[in-house]
Structures are given as structure tokens and as C-alpha cells.
Image (tube, rainbow, N blue to C red; front, side, top):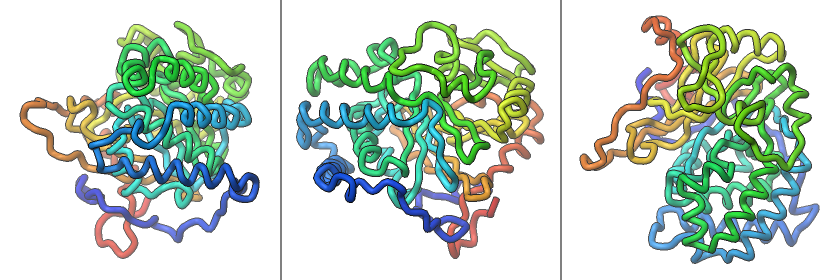
Amino acid sequence: MSADANNNKPGSVEEPKSKETPKFDLAKENPRCAEWMDDCIKRLNSLYKDTSINICGVMSGHEIIAIIRLVENIFMEESNLCEAEAPIKVVGDIHAQYQDLNRLFDLIGRVPEEKLMFLGDYVDRGPQGIEVVVLLFCLKIRYRDRIFLLRGNHETPSVNKIYGFYVECQYKYGVGLWWDFQACFNRIPMAGLISKKVLCMHGGLSPELVNLDTIRNIPRPCEPLDRGLLIDLLWSDPTNKGEGWFHSIRGISYMFGKGVVEQACKSLDIDLIIRAHQVVQDGYEMMTGRRLITVFSVPNYCAQFTNAAAVVCLNANLQISFQQMLPPALPDSCKAKAAPAIAVDLNLEAARADKETIKPFAKEGSKEGGKS
């Protein structure tokens, strides 16, 4: 199946839509807060396709701080290993590409109709990190059991002070807001567990991850240092260069091979790991062994790559499919290139077979695509 099977058109799931309703209804618990969040979401959505204004034109710094205070309390009420049930869609890196995030929502559906889990890296690199993170925070406040936000390595001060978010905060509202965001980022859960069988995080596995309680017991607020479980969950990467643990080419954390993935699935009693953290050409990549998926969810990353965006879809039976958003054409001056493969099987036929285990998201009434 070619990448054109999903050609940027919204579609319905291969099964009837879930009739699941939110367990927590903010409109009943706190009508005034729900009304406020609905208004915030409406104002933020007005920035979609209108690049003549930014968030400063629709929201004050004081209002953003109030949103931060609310959402960080919600994060602290969740486990550091936040748990969700399928059906659900898993979203990778966004990196301040606010317009592309909304295009993605047009394709995959929006909260609360769809349940979503985001794997971090909301800020840096792109121009609208505040817009991205505040919209997601408002959705979390309004529909807390329909959207789950995990922490990425860019939700740390040592990284987002360098790669754009600090300057963005300084330019739009002042440096003080950047500090408020860091306090909130330190409270975001580090990993997610879907239907007890699919482990999600931003980076990857750790030698210190001996059981799932290891994640649950990480105290928050917390700031990752230079090594250890927190760093690995945010930074480690899969590799096809061997079976075990290796020094990372990033100079931080580890790289891990197929044998580590298989052992982790056995010891943690899980079937699959979904992580983000690396740009991949098709928006997703299946690691050799079919136990690990890398997902990246905005196209044309930094205008340096010609990658597509994708999300991983898990139905109620934990069958896997994907929805893909093709990249728009870039000007020749960008000199963008294809993203490299990161952990596919070195045997081309095996790599193709691994990739085809994730089927395109079937459209209702469509002659294209296939059911997983």
C-alpha cells in the first residue's frame, strides 16, 4: 500500500466508533471552568490557518499562568505511569508546529470524540510552542480522561532553553512565563500504559526499568539529570546494530537492541512499546522484532526533512493501524532530505514485512487501505 492511501483526508475507523463516554464531566463538576476552557479552546482554534496573529492576540500571560496552575494539579493526580484503555490513538513529536498539529487533528479527529495519548516534545524547533502546549493543556483540563500528555526530552529546561522555547516565551510574554512552564513540565507523567499491554514513553527503555512500579514510584515534581531512569525514558533510542545495550551517539543515555526489547516485553508483561523522539520518513517505523514502534507526528520536520507525519491507532482489541499525513511541498531553497531509517531490519525483505504489519487506517466505504 502506498503512502497515498491516507492522502490527508479524515476518515472513520474500521470498526463502529466507540460509544465510550468520558468518566469525568467538567461541565457537571465545574460549569464555570468548563465554559472558560471551551472559550480558551475556541480562541486558540482561531489561530489555525491565520498566521497573521499569534497567541498574544487572544490570551494574556496571566490567563496562561492560571491554565498552567490548573493542569499541573491534574498531572499530579495521575500516576507517573498514566493508564488508559483502548481504543486510542498515539501521537509522537509535535515540536511547536501548531498549524501542522491542527491539520493532524483534521485528519485523525479531535478530543473528545477521539481518545489521544501524546508522547511529548511539544515545544522547541518550531515557532508556536506556546500555542501547542496551551491548547493541549486546555484540552487536558476540559477532557482529562480523553487526552493523556507524557513528557518529552524537550520538556526540560536544559533543552528548551537552547532550542527555541525560551526565546519564544521571552519574545511573546517575558522570561517569567518560561519558568512557570518548567514547573509544570516537571509534573507531567513520564510514561503511559494502554490496556495493561502497550507501554508508551518519549525516548525508550532503561537498564533501571525492572518493573512498571519503577516508573510509578518516580517522585514528582522531578527534573531529569544526566543519567538514570528519567533520562533514559526521555532520551534512549533503539538500534539495529546489535542485541544489547550500547553507548548512545547522542552522548546521553543508551541505545538498545532487539534483545533488550524482547526481554523488556517479557519482564514487564507487555506486548508492545510505542515511543517517539526520532524523525522517521513515513511518520512511523517498526523495529525489527515487531515489538517497538517509533512514531513522529508532524511533517517536514524543521523544513529540513521531507518526512510524513503519522499516528498509531489501537482498536479495542489492540490491533494496530496507522493514519498518515503527507508532507506539503517545500521550496527548493529548503534543501530538505529524507529522514534516515533508525532501527529497521537490515534485511530489506524482513524490513518490508515488518512495516506491512501496520496497516493503513481503513476508511469506511473506501476501496483503499486494509484492516489490521
